[in-house]
Length: 184
Image (cartoon, rainbow, N blue to C red):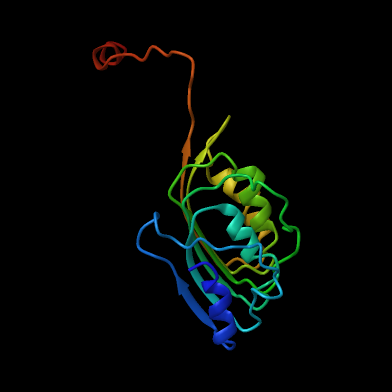
């Protein structure tokens, strides 16, 4: 499976749709990106559904090696900052539909997810399924409008299941049900 993607794009040179994942996260696609983008690329791939381990794979998939891609559905196991520098500033004008889901919670919403979405200037459909660890405020309608909708002029459909998670490290004394009843 080491170079399976390179093999797929070499053999199926006119491939337009690819669904690439295993049913479990233990065996999901481990793509190698030591391969230069010129040898691991496709100018015909339009739709890619893939399940991978890390966010850096998502960045590699959108670094220009699939320049005609208009639909990307990517399911991640986790979202962390990449260990090495990845070219991730290039606009992604052909992408019309982006679905991003992650099974693990992440604290990189502002740092990684939003900048990636901002590169997708012609996005018409966006679907986010994420658990975000927040520091101060929950991700609510105001946040989504300010940070996503106001940046996506072509967006026609926005589907989201974003769970904000805030860890409170100071002890809190919460009132009992009986205490609350006494205040009524």
